[in-house]
Picture (cartoon, rainbow, N blue to C red):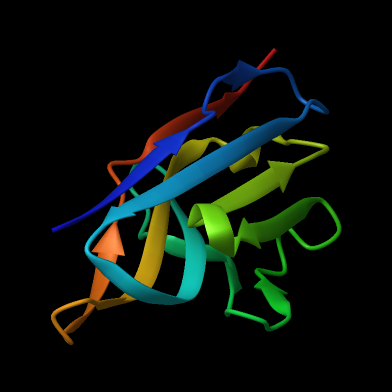
Length: 120
């Protein structure tokens, strides 16, 4: 069993900042790619940012220069620092992780989502 628990979503004014966190727990052997996705009403879920273990981060063009993804491997946690937030960033943000379990299986796990609302 693996759990991803997100936190940090909130209501923020345009131009503001938020920091999302996602902590993984369970029978984890290794975590490979960790990523943040988001989904707005009526839209498909989209990749916001991803980071491979020991690798460089990747960002959607819409968030480059404003969002920063980072991870703490010891804590099995990924973060998303969001600056200069815009109303179009409003969405439910989901954490995703590519995980090797102690059983030898490999899974793609999802968190329950955390809501970010950017509005004045």
